[in-house]
Image (cartoon, rainbow over all chains, first blue to last red; front, side, top):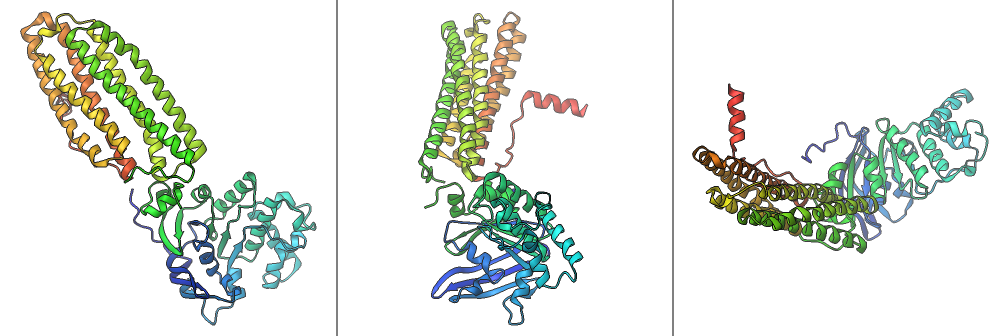
Length: 260
Length: 240
C-alpha cells in the first residue's frame, strides 16, 4: 500500500530542477526525475503538457529548435549532458531515440542498422558489422523476419517492422538509454504488442523512457509512471499505484477520463 | 470525495449510474427481506415468510445483472483508479448482498418449522437485533451510494452492538431451553436466526470496508472484533 521507496538505486539519468523555454514561453517548469536501467519509465499527460519536450531534453534534441533554452541539470552517469565538453553526437548514441512515425533511412535493412555503428567506429571490419547488425535485429525481434532479405529497402517493410527496425538501429550503437516518443501510435494492435513485448525484453539492458498517450500501454509496459500537466511533473510513482490509487486529484481526473 | 459524474465519455457515467442504481435496489430488497422475515417470525405469518423466499429470486437476478454490467464496463471502458476500485467493489458487494438475502430467506424458511414462538422471551431481543442489522445494511449501502468513508467506518463500529446482542441472545436461549425443554426445537431454530443476524452484521461490515477502500484507496484498519461464544470456545480449545 505504501508509495514510499521510489528511490532509483544507481540512476542512469538524473534530471534536477529542469526548465525548458521556447522563446518566452516556459514549456517545462522545475522537473526533477531519475531514470534507471531496471525500470521502464512512462511519461503520460494530455497533449501540450510537456512530456515530449522533457523527453527531448534528455538527449538534447531540443538543441535543434533555435528558440529552445534548457536550464537546470541533467546528468548521464553523473556527467552533465549540457556541459560544453559534452559531444552531442556521442550523447545521442548513448541516449537513443525512437519516434512516433517509423523513419527508416531509404537504404537497405542492413545499412539502416549498420550505419550508426560504422560512423561511430564500432565495427572495424565487415565481419564485426555483420555481428552487430544481426545482434541488434535479434534483440529488436526482427531478425527472423528479415534475415533473408537484408539487402531490401527498409522502407519496404510494414509499419510495425519499420518501427522495430528503428529500435534495432537505436540498439546497434550500444546505447545506455532509449527514449521512445509514442512508438506505437502509428501501429496496429499486433505490431503494438510486439513493441511492448520488446520493451519488456529490453528492460534491464537499457534505461527506457516511453512517452505515450495510451494509458493502457503505460500501465502495461512501465514500472514507474510520471504524470505531466501544464509543464509540471504532477505525480511520479509506481505504475501500479498511479493507475489504482493516484494521490493527486489532477492525476486521477486524467487517468479516469474526467480531464478537461 | 465528491460524487463525480463528469467523465468526458458520458456513456461511462451512464453505466456507472446504472450500476449504482442496481446495487441500491438490491440492497433495498435485502433489507426488506430481512424485515419481512423477522415480521413473519414474530407473527407466525406463513404467507409473508413464503413471499420472502419467493422474492429472494429477484435479489439473485439483480446480482447477475450487476455482474454482467460490471464485467462489460471493465471490458469496454477500461476504468482506472477510483472507477476501477468501484467496479471491483461492486462485484464483491453484490455477492455479499446476495448472501444477506440468503440469510433472510433462511430465517423465513424456519418460520413454518416453529410453533408458539411468541411465548419465547428471546423474540423481542431478536427483533431489536434485526432492526440494528437492517440499519447497518442500509447505512453500508448508503455509504456506497454517497462515497461516504466516515459513514462506512461508523457501520463497522456499530457492528459491535450486533455481536453483543448475539452473545446475550445465545445465553438467554440456552437458559430458556434448560428451563423449558419442550421448546428446544423452537429455541434451536432461534439460535440459528440469531446466528444469521450476526452474520448479516458481519456482511454489512464487509461492505463498509469495501466502500472505505473505494473512497480512500486504503484498507480500513482492523477493528477490535467483538467476541462471540464460538470464539471463546475455540480459544479454550486452543488453550487446552
